[in-house]
Image 1 (cartoon, rainbow over the protein chains, first blue to last red):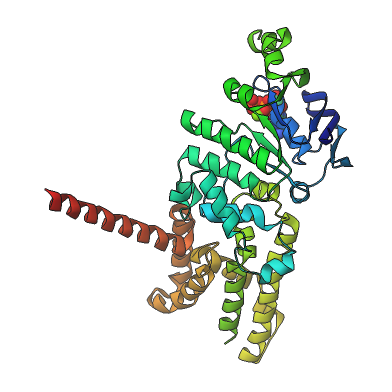
Image 2 (cartoon, rainbow over the protein chains, first blue to last red; image 1 turned 180 degrees about the vertical axis):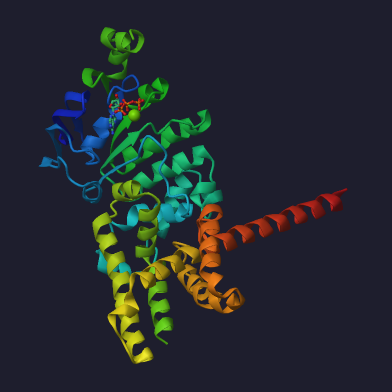
Length: 247
Length: 164
Ligand SMILES: Nc1ncnc2c1ncn2[C@@H]1O[C@H](COP(=O)(O)OP(=O)(O)OP(=O)(O)O)[C@@H](O)[C@H]1O
Ligand SMILES: [Mg+2]
């Protein structure tokens, strides 16, 4: 199977703290890869390095075989890589619909053609599909800031799918989402994964959620990759149990 | 005439997908960037649009006063224009227009205060910054919302009374 993302010997330090320490892995096209690890183990930092938010101290990142280390986030996004942040990040003053259209608009035409095109750039139907899919139709015209936390979290995830990305990195999508929604979110992710052939990398503390959603799991501890394998193998791994219970 | 033309042009830009991108950049540049919004190009365009309008304003201004010298464009004027946008409401389409009206009509209304006018204006601006950083347009929006909410409660009240 072809790999869509390759990370080689990635390292990121902040002053004396080595947040990500010599991490290497590949993500295969079409898989749902989980990343777990204790708080502060470097999961979010790893995402930020892959996505150009941080410049890695050393190491190489490749998307589709092309080196993207240090590439600007906006450019990476237009190459088909999208993400959510750990902390909720929607645009509170824009409506739910405008949040979604914004998430897709930079993929349409050029800046000049966008200036003269219809304001929604023909993205209305796609936005409505996302609104339906994530059960947001009741609030579609409301400002995103007025939604409940869980709804904003769903909108945040929906925005990552607007442009039909090939690779999506989700940082704790289940945080703050209630149990019923959680099941729904998992189904939505599976659907999009199967139907649109999108590849996912998911950071998540909710074990039940990761184990049931992901086909393969990486475990980070203190910036290092300590284990990799199927959910069942990870559950039984002594090093993983130690990392979670031993400190 | 010129104002109308520019208002129209600006309205077009604000309504287009550019307006959405500008708003997103103002609210959360990091998230905007992660969604493909090219911060540098949009910021550049915002400056370009602003400067070309200022340039055009200058070109209209010269024939209007029929006399022009560098001292008409001192720091005071720049500050005054900045204040107009702040008082009116940053990020509102009608904000600068409203701010401009206040800045120009204010001295007329407060003529009685004579030399104290500037002090009054300064106090007004400071009070605004402290209690309503969104400017007059923001104030208007808040009031409208409160009145709207009031109307809703009244309607709800009436509904309950009817049922009882
Ligand atoms: N911008 C930064 N400046 C300084 N230190 C940072 C920065 N970002 C992360 N760190 C440090 O890097 C380490 C890893 O943080 P990171 O956010 O990647 O952890 P995480 O695995 O995502 O944790 P959590 O599960 O709590 O989200 C922490 O020790 C943190 O303090
Ligand atoms: Mg994190």
